[in-house]
Image 1 (spheres, rainbow, N blue to C red):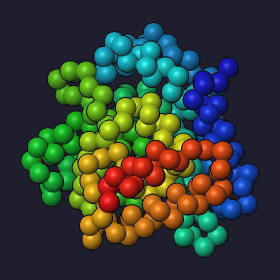
Image 2 (cartoon, one colour):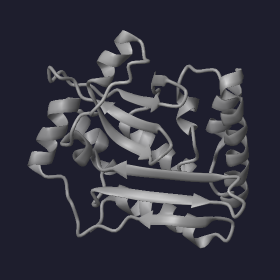
Image 3 (tube, helix red, strand yellow):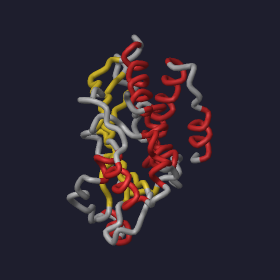
Image 4 (cartoon, one colour):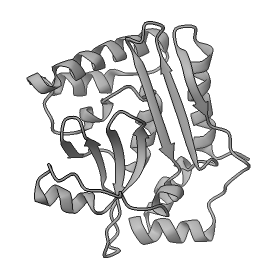
Length: 222
């Protein structure tokens, strides 16, 4: 039987595939079979995120190693993309192979301890889990934007990140809504405008979903 999150992810993909408003470039979600949480998996999650994290993430695991969705409106004015790894795949994977020397020294130290969880290929943006080198359990999620030279701690845990990613369908920069960054400055003017257009489109195409929290966070950062 597919995992609960695998089923929800497939439903989100079908939403995008079934609307005539979006052109789908990538829709990769199928798995080779069911991937239940094993004792070894639980040990891995417990080691890096703490023993009580196992129950908290159990209903947000995938059967697939990763899923990939990419779409856009016919005029390319609104678009979204994400490649999201299963938590177990992320935790057992490699650390980021580089550090951005433009960041502050303290941020560079954190960047040495992250593993990519989700990214939009070619965008220069990714979200990563902090996996402490000294094996201290940690659940921090960090958002890296190479273009803006930003490395921000997210006000989200793994499960809420996964939920919000499916809700937003990977629109660019939605993660900033869960940081302390203000979006009314010059450097973020274009991104803020893109987020507004994207939320307008999502609300129009998917009226059954509630985007009010995202709207509230958008207003709080102006």
